[in-house]
Length: 598
Image (cartoon, rainbow, N blue to C red; front, side, top):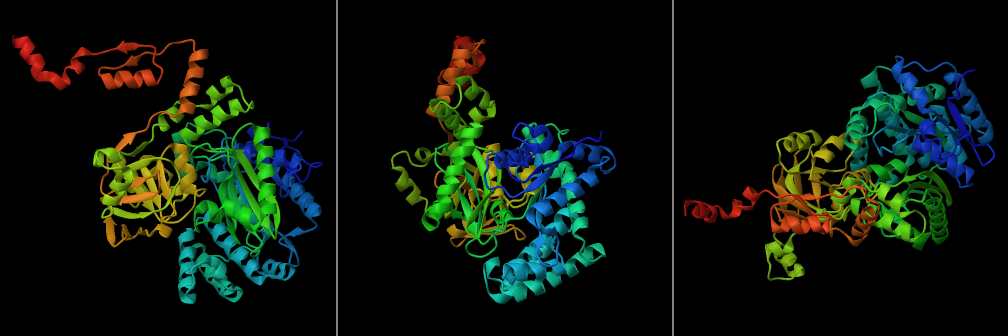
């Protein structure tokens, strides 16, 4: 009997997966199936299993027996369910092709949107939607994603043409480009594609799908994915599933949108819907930080019925998973769709607060809360903050900040409650190189991409010009415990990566200059400001007390000085295991020498 590699999720009646099938369907696929079985508005689709990926990678990139036929069967069933055909010239079915490992690796593997478009299908989409601008915008997005993800042609070539066109039209946003200009842009994209690959852009939708599936399988072994797994201690033999899902269009006019929301604040743990969205956009625009999005509270004002629906869904999902959820959603012409849910990445402070609150809400036990806290979470709660008292011990903080006006550069959105100071560096490789030489660095980028992960991990903090609180930079920084400020262009910051310069407030910061980013209020300063570690929050102290209640082993500290003794007591040490008297004498060597000589 042929092994099963493809699992459908069409509706509550046709759903072949569940949340407990993460090993087979990956986290994304398992949760899509779970949301479908709960009756939530999920676009129909199917999942290709992690086992298929592992076979592909281990066997010279050959599909396992029966996989191609299973994909054809699932695709035909999806077409029948939707009443559309992939790449049809009249009313085309379009799909997204997305990765989904068992353990979440946000942004580290590949995605292709709007797959199924070609020169004929885009005409059909323009007619059936009665919106040519939307159709050609979708086609140009698909072209550059396919070229970049599937064929390895850097998206920078396409972005350059896009920026050039916006300058010629004297416009700022992609959404302002009219349909006729998008048609011309598509022709330029075709030229770029052919110049780099020596062939025309593919017009066969089934070939597009096959190539995209293979590309997602391969993305498991990209440098950024391997770096991320090494940093997070994720095994390399898990593989990724592939999720093929009906496209929902957040770029179908002003009544459409796309966004990311968390059921609680991933920086502080506060129990409140937290997130951002973009009107007339697709999901990658939010995560990539291409445009700075709107806070989710604005949806409550402009579309209260959609906000309330999202709030209801978020409460249902948190109750189902007993943990804070990170959700992706798209609104197509006023209708809400859920594209993903997963346990959200969070700071150490938020990890402690959320676990503590869930115990008090009766959702988890104290023992479960303890198991959810990693040692790194405790360490990350000690994020440093700017030591304003050290700058001027006699002045209130507001006055100290006012006195630093000559050092103030601008501000952005604080994506994590931490401060960092370091040398400004504009390249991820350079950041890693300097960090390996024990230099403190701040990685400065227009926006980060998954390819920057190694530089982000090596830096003390991250500063971006574009992006919001749910962009790639913000999500990754929170998870790996880095200070991060995003969307600083609105606060007067301009970054030129090629020149390796940051300009703001009439000042120029070059590579190697010291800067400080303050995660408390999003402020950015030139020069090196003093920082100090924070105290453990009450929620984390409570969890450490719970640890003592269940602990079988007592921990004693290695301490030589009074401040170390006090810190050991604060952390719950049961005593001092080692006190080296020679270390106690370091600050009083003259006194000790005098005693010996006497």
